[in-house]
Amino acid sequence: MNNTRPIIEKCAERAGSRYELWIDFIRSAGLEHMAEVGVYRGNFASSILENCSSLKKYYMIDPWRHLDDWNKPANEDDALFESFFAETKARTDFAGEKRVILRGKTVEVIDDLPDEQLDFAYIDGDHTLKGIAIDLICIYPKVRPGGFIGGDDFSKTIWQHHSKYEPTLVFPFAVYFAEAVGAPIYGLPYNQFLIEKTIARSFEFVDLTGDYSNLSLRGQLDANKALKLKMAEMLPRATKYARKMKKWFSK
Image 1 (cartoon, rainbow, N blue to C red):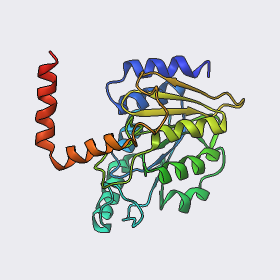
Image 2 (tube, rainbow, N blue to C red; image 1 turned 45 degrees about the vertical axis):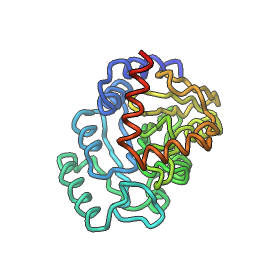
Image 3 (cartoon, rainbow, N blue to C red; image 1 turned 120 degrees about the vertical axis):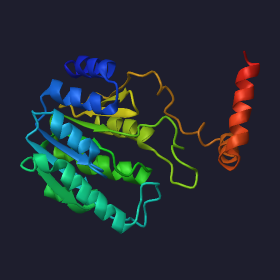
Image 4 (cartoon, one colour; image 1 turned 90 degrees about the vertical axis):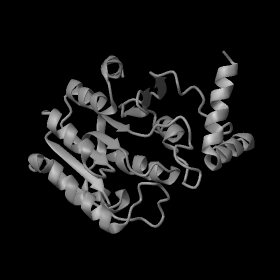
């Protein structure tokens, strides 16, 4: 962790986007073997492969199909996912010798990855509690000691999407997971996180943003907050106007 902290701090300070953050980190740490869980249309994969010459192998894990038990906005129909799969291949064909496509849910294809093979795994798949639990638990043994797990949608609110969708629980679950396995975890800009798989168990949550002070879910599940959320969804214009008025009167 002593070597990792200054590297990730500098990367976080310099980054203008999540893409820049991870490109800088992969380059700075000299990472060679990586997996991405949740590839979708291949934008992240193509950017990483194009800008990180140190990478020798890039595993791409995604079912690219409709999932009946996944209640999130990105759950499209099979035909559209088939087009996303074709788009992903086209975007990453330039790195065909490095690319390994594992088409399936994490639990369906994880055994195709050797244990302790990865320097870095990036999780951007199912952000529900079920999804992030499965992905972290499955991918952790595939990362070598001294390697890393990063991820997206480390959202401060569980209500990342409309309340008709399953809540997003990457945060705080990733922190709980890091504590369970005895690993340091960093809260990063652009709703990102980084877990370091240390040899010695040494959990610590290092929040480089100052936004993740409360690990409790109680406040987010408060009945009054839930009612406000529902009202905001039902009456978006009125809610927006009320916020403007409140801001104006507070001046």
